[in-house]
Length: 147
Ligand SMILES: [Zn+2]
Image (cartoon, rainbow, N blue to C red; front, side):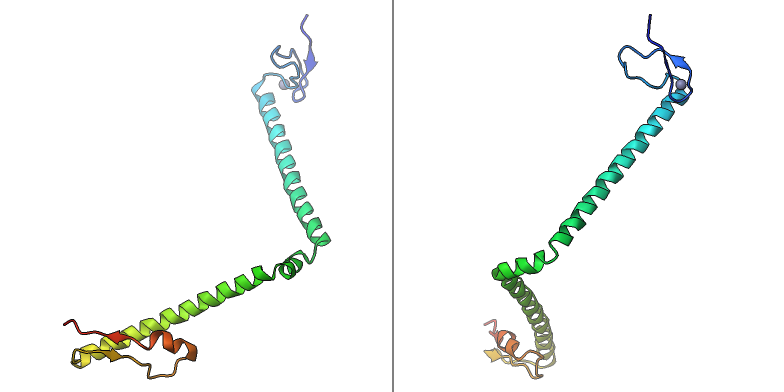
């Protein structure tokens, strides 16, 4: 005789399916929905626990290693210097680009305003740039005639 047990949802007795000997809910749609709902709640709780554990572990680690990054930077001066140098290069390049653009704009306007005798020219900045070092990079532009 088949085993009978009580459904966890409707509390009526039912026979577990042979392919699911651990069945705890009968096959009524309501009871199956209840089973799924509880399964999802458990899963959400498990996930929440998992994320909470991850966060807790992270913050415990940070409390145990509060100066990890400052020590890392002390141990790796090359890393720090490289970062600084990269930033310097980026700033430098941006300044250079800006100055180059304005120099080209000035050149264009002066060419259209006056007729330039074909030949070799050296362009010098008239206004004093904010960064004097940059001048050598962009001020000296040689123009060659098309001839
Ligand atoms: Zn049931």
